Amino acid sequence: MDKGLFITLEGPDGSGKSTQIEYLREYFHGKGIETVLTREPGGTEIGEKLRDIILDKGNCEMCDMTEALLYAASRAQHVNQLIKPALEAGKVVVCDRFIDSSIAYQGYGRKLGDAVRVINELAVDGCMPDLTFLMEISPEIGKSRIKSESQDRLEQEKIEFHNRVYAGYREIARFYPARFAEIDAARDKLSIKKDILGRIEKILNDRGF
Image (cartoon, rainbow, N blue to C red; front, side):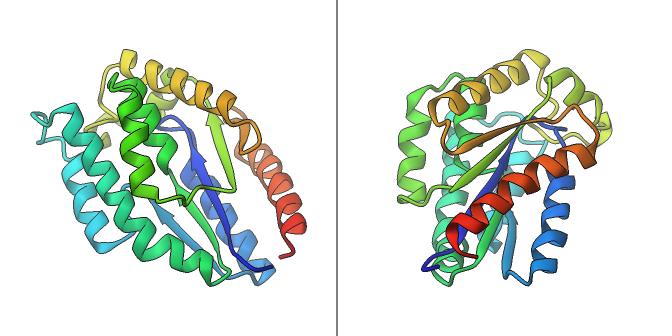
């Protein structure tokens, strides 16, 4: 093994990513594999400040391109400060959302199109996930899992926006079938965990962990 392993979890709001990331924390700890668990937007001090701006419900006047650029700025800092150094040190990095979220939410959801991909290719500087789990669940079910009072600026968007995001995710997965593992996230959490760990065990063996 000469490099780390980069795993991302993607999907609509309320798809259960956070629960599965906690399972992954336990799994890698049990294996004695040094792991960095992180999230986007955020992951660094600068990134977390940008996260607060992006998701603040009070920032309703934020234009779509500003939103896209703030996500990309947070990601550029995240990759440079945390993700790349961890991978170069041979660690496993598990990230709650990454570039595919921007393409789905801003490219498809906000209808900004290919500009989002171009911006984020600069931000990631060639650092792409080895494996991405797409947590597939209907936006209606996902939104129903989040209490209305706790919804952030994007979570409280209309269902039409979330439907575009979900359609975008599924199209992205079709573009990159070798990287994506599509997971039925409407099932019970232990069944989902079993599927995810099955894929992870295979890639760990293939990569010599």
